[in-house]
Amino acid sequence: MINVDPLELEKFSQLAHRWWDPGAEFKPLHDINPLRLDHIDGAAGLRGKNVLDVGCGGGILAESMAARGARVTGIDLAGEPLKVAQLHLVESGLQVDYRLVAPEVLARETPGSFDLVTCMELLEHVPDPAVTVEACATLAKSGGRLFFSTINRSLKSYLLAVIGAEYVLKLLPRGTHDYARFIKPSELAAMCRAAGLQVEGVTGMTYNPFSKTYALGNDADVNYILHAIKP
Ligand code: SAH
Image (cartoon, rainbow, N blue to C red; front, side, top):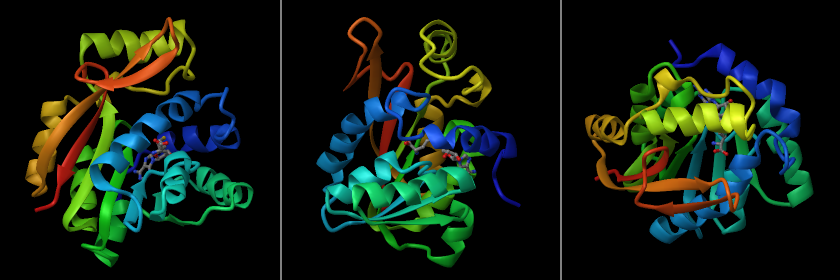
C-alpha cells in the first residue's frame, strides 16, 4: 500500500504547466526558494552532496540545489510535474535525476544512500505523514541530514494559510490546503524521533503581506522547516 492521496496528485498535475511561471499558482514556492535553499546549504553544505528531494514537483528546489553543486535525485508520484521538471532541465542546463517512485518504495530499493534528504511542502498532502518521515529516515545515510517543511496546525495558520492565502490574497488556488492535515512542530518532531532521527531545530517562515516578502525566524506558527540528523 502506498501512502498517497490521488486527488492531491491530480491537483498538482492539473497545474503542472504553470510550475515555472513565477507569477502563477506556485509563486509562493518561487518566493520562499532562496530562503530555504540558503538555510539548507548553510546547515548541510550542498556542494558534492548526494541529495534526494522527496515530492520535488516541477523541480524548483531540486534544480537550485543542483546549481549549488549537489548531485540531486528528485522523486514525485505525480507524472505531469515530473515531465515539467525534466523539460525545464533543457532550459536551465542543470542535471537532476527525476524518477516517478514513492519514497517508501525507494527506501526498500536503496536504503541509507543519501547525505541529505529534503521533503518540502509535501507532508500536509499525504494521508499518513509518519510513513513518509520514516521512509525519508531510511533513505538517509547514517550521519545524514533531513529537512522537512510543512504547515503548523493553529488558529493562526488556518486564518493565514487557508483563509488569507487562498481566499483573501489569492496567493494559492482554493482547496490547496486541508487544515486537518496540517502538522504541529511537536508532532513532526515526534514522528522524526519515532523514525530514529534526532531533531536539530525548527525554523519558522513568515510572510509579510505588506512588503510581500518572506523571512526565516523564530515564528513557526504557520510555515516552518524542521532539521533532523540520522545518528
Ligand atoms: N517540494 C516541492 C513541491 C511541493 S508541492 C517544493 O517545495 O517546491 C507538493 C508535491 O508533492 C507535488 O508535486 C505532489 O505531486 C507531491 N506529492 C503529493 N503526494 C505525494 C506522495 N505521496 N509521494 C510523493 N510525492 C507526492
